[in-house]
Length: 407
Image (cartoon, rainbow, N blue to C red; front, side, top):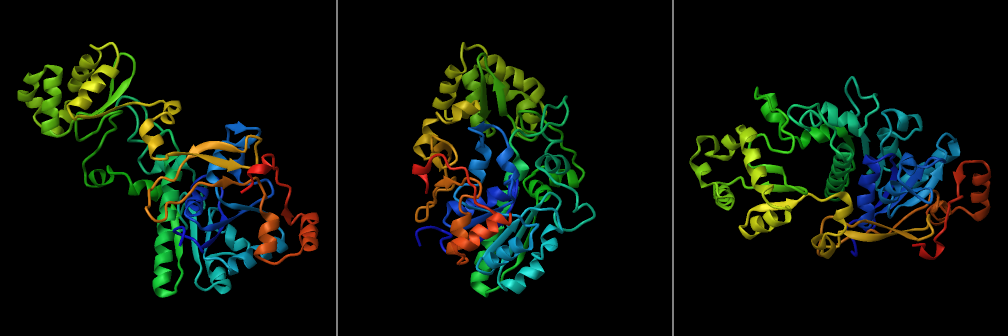
């Protein structure tokens, strides 16, 4: 095997962020992902910002997939989808509950087409429960899961986390559990159905749940931790710096560095828990020391020399210039036929696997692979493809600018 999921075929009905992020991970690691898009394309193709009218977000989310445009309102399009599913290993969708059934493509119907199929549905609320039919987005997942409540300043309102963390966690969950289901199928020959909820995904990575469930009410703490300190973002004169000196050994080093050894005998700061309870007085002490320097660069170097975990806070435009991340291949050229330059700079494959490292290869223009999929996978002739196109069942009018970069 040259790649982890080589030989696995996935039919991707997903839209927006969570579902497409999951299937793109399989494409990174060698799966053939056939993305079925509506004639107007995945909604993420209309997410700003744009280069030459093409969404940068969509380029990333649809990477390494084959784009096939089908108008699923037409019976012939549904038949094409069923034919593809008959030769697939996994079907992933992110519609509201009931949409796949409307097309005759829910799990019970899919196993009639392919008995060992694995199907994964990704929604905000999940497939069951009294609110399962509500539209679910990242913002809603952050709010219901408590994530939003635990984010922001103690004296301010609940705050949305910047990136769409609910979507990304949902996508990672889908990737992980589809992988597990493939392993189970290899062992037993049986497929299964996977129900992913964005809300439950964030609950699953919220460490404040158990205290809250058992009568200990956690409160948001802004740029610092509730239970341990010093562990947070501290302001210097010309920027911010993260300091994590939670062990008693590191706390003692920090006190020595600040010239404040008397703090070691202060009852308010005797351990990480007590220091967290007294962050109100501790934070100004540390920030006063930082601001005694003209630039955070100076205390940053001192902290590093003493082995105290720290870093400067990067602006997003600074991230790509990080030499450590560059050395690890965190950034790559993502090829595309949709814009004249033929590429954008994008994130690389995150996990580093020694034998099957994965690759971020290309991103398709809308409908770019319609002809290829119908010919090579289903045996359609040029005349049949032209007829389907004239009937509006398919769309092969992909916008291709950087033809020399076609994968």
